[in-house]
Amino acid sequence: DQQVKQNSPSLSVQEGRISILNCDYTNSMFDYFLWYKKYPAEGPTFLISISSIKDKNEDGRFTVFLNKSAKHLSLHIVPSQPGDSAVYFCAAKFGNEKLTFGTGTRLTIIP
Amino acid sequence: GAVVSQHPSWVICKSGTSVKIECRSLDFQATTMFWYRQFPKQSLMLMATSNEGSKATYEQGVEKDKFLINHASLTLSTLTVTSAHPEDSSFYICSATQGANPTGNTIYFGEGSWLTVV
Image (cartoon, rainbow over the protein chains, first blue to last red):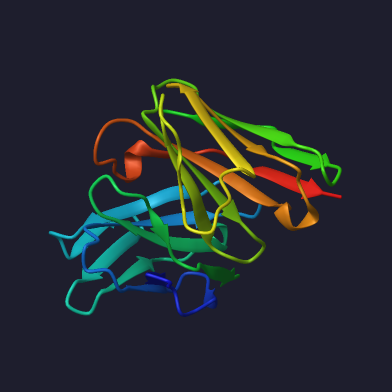
């Protein structure tokens, strides 16, 4: 039972344009959501997070939007840069419980 | 900032042998450590949660007798893959947290350990 899903396994975006990565979840208990960037054979790198009491959080080029009614969150990267090419995972948790990761989306930025 | 280090980064072992992977929190006391496994092109799957001084809690489907987890101190957790087989070949990642209700900035991941069983 995949509680956190990323329905797009891959995404290609032109450099300088906006990248939008999507994530859906089924567990309404989740109250904290995170986005990670990951390269092969490396640990995940934390990018940005959002609490369920908010609907938007922004940090530089990265913005995360949360739609609780739709159980959907998205990560916007603008402008996209070649160094953004990686696999992106969304993750969710509630309270002190474990992180549940999505299936990942491979983002490729085209120069 | 805080750092979590894993060792070894990669290891090759023969089928039937055991291999130990260490996860250390270098500058903070990790009350909870998590072990994940990632197969190629797949998500990170949580294997077990360990709290210092107590037995690990394993996720459904993870054999606790095969994947031995020890969290004997606040800075070290070990994962031992016993009687390893080729299907155990995977990328193993640990993470560590300190205190209650950790956030993105207080959940620290190791660099990962690539295990190949031949």
